[in-house]
Image (cartoon, chains in turn red, brown):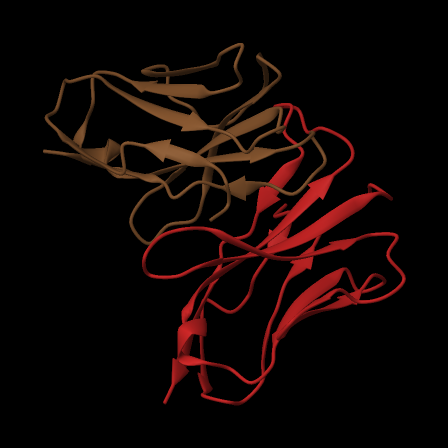
Amino acid sequence: AQKITQTQPGMFVQEKEAVTLDCTYDTSDPSYGLFWYKQPSSGEMIFLIYQGSYDQQNATEGRYSLNFQKARKSANLVISASQLGDSAMYFCAMREQELNPSGQNFVFGPGTRLSVLP
Amino acid sequence: DSGVTQTPKHLITATGQRVTLRCSPRSGDLSVYWYQQSLDQGLQFLIQYYNGEERAKGNILERFSAQQFPDLHSELNLSSLELGDSALYFCASSATLWDTQYFGPGTRLTVL
């Protein structure tokens, strides 16, 4: 089963509007962390925001916020007031406390490509 | 700037050749990860090192090998290169096994 699901391969949003990028995850580990990364066309991977499973409040970083719904196992990224520079690929990732059989505890989703329209 | 450095930025080589990609983690980070990203694909985890020891292994081909040195920098060696090895190779580092991964700018490998 996929650990991280991002159901929106591509999305469009009008400049200055808000947009929500979906991410659902699957884990039985009570302690885990959720991350969002941005990859613009230039290629670099930029860390945006982090949410711990025990955090009581939703994480926020500037125009980025994470809508964390633990019971639904979702960690959607909300970008407010979209800018042209927000056009990029966005990856959701999860870190679990327990290691998988290969020894890894960090997994990335397939990504969502966001295009901001002028 | 994440603080993770990777060299070279671009590499063009021929099939059958061998290349070495280098990564210097952020100051103080003990864990180094290597990822491969083919065109318009997601991130494929290759291998992870923690404080000099191999910690986790993903979809890394036998033609590929890596190591982390005592000064914590890491090298990824790719040999007998094939056209399909053309990709963006990322190095990431984290302070511990459970901290945020910060990515380097990547090395874009083109195999002709």
